[in-house]
Image (cartoon, rainbow, N blue to C red; front, top):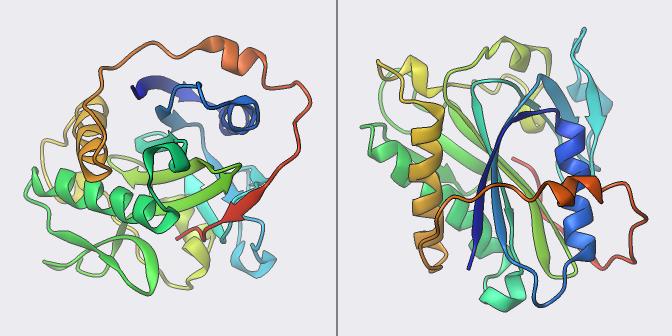
Length: 238
C-alpha cells in the first residue's frame, strides 16, 4: 500500500535530505510513499546544471542537488510531489514513471478545463491551447537509487512566477512558465489539486487507491545519519 502524505510547507533541504535518507535506508518491506509539499523560495540546480542558466538569483538561495538536469524554481503556491517508489517491486520503469507523472498532470488539468500535454523533446507538461499555448505548467526531475525513485514533479498552481525570469528554466533560455491561476478563476485549492493529482498518478501507474496519512516524522529525524552505498540511475530534469 502506498502511503500518501501532505507535508505542508517546508524548506527544500530538509525534505531533500529526508527523501534521500529514506531511499538509502529502505528495504523490500518499506512502504512506498508519495509526499506532497510546498517549498519556501529556492532554486535547485541538478548535477549537470550549468552556471550560465543562473541569470540573477538575487536573494533566493541556490541548492545543488543530486538529480539530473538543470535549474528550476520552487516556491509557495506550487504543488511539489515526490514519489518514493520501489520501481522494481511495482514493475514500473523510469520512463513509465515519467510518463505517469505527465499523464496524471494532464488528467488533473483536464478536470479544470485546461488542455495540456507532454513534449517528446523536453520532459514536463505544456499548454496546447489558447494564447499561452507552449508555456510550461509542470516540471519533472527524478533520480533512481537502488531501484527506488525520489525527487519528482512541480506543478504551478497560484504562485509568484517572477523568479523563473532569474533563470533559464530547466536550461531553456526564454522558456515561458504559466500557472493555473492565470487560466481559471477561482483558482482551486492546493489540497484539491494535490488530491486529484495523486489519484490520477496511482491510476496511471496501475497502483491501488490510497488514503492520505500523517507523515512519519521519524524519517526526517533520521535523515542526518550516514548514507549507505549507492547504486544510481538518473533521468533529466525538465
